[in-house]
Length: 159
Image (cartoon, rainbow, N blue to C red; front, side):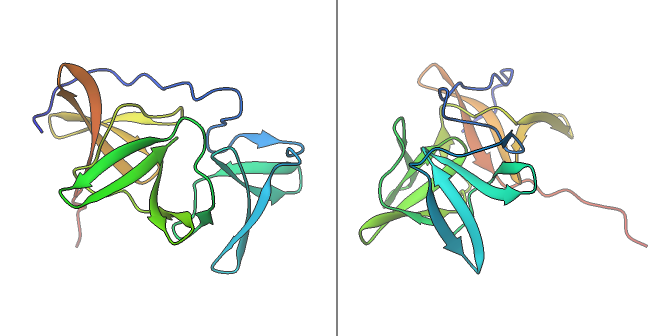
């Protein structure tokens, strides 16, 4: 898709959504425990938490985490001709067995919105929105401002 600059405006996912780094003192009783690679997370309404000394901090979803039900407001995104994934709040899911597993974003995937916590970055003469480790290129699709996952290679000086 061709690059079409538009400013980054975080999307509001509702009162249950918190951006990465946000700390809460307690979790709702509906939070469930998810373990990925011997690391324990709490999950509630599309948000992943890890316990800290001051409560629970919101963290990116771990690739491989599986949930049984997608959060309310999840959208379907086209990855390629044969694959559709699901998207909510910066997290991508793939149908797996009786649940939905967190997967890494795939270049070329287009989403309508990005949550709070992204930052505009300029690489060369193009502006991107960086959300976690993922770069999004602002585009227009069917007259709507959208974001496309892109692979951005940055070169660093080596000696």
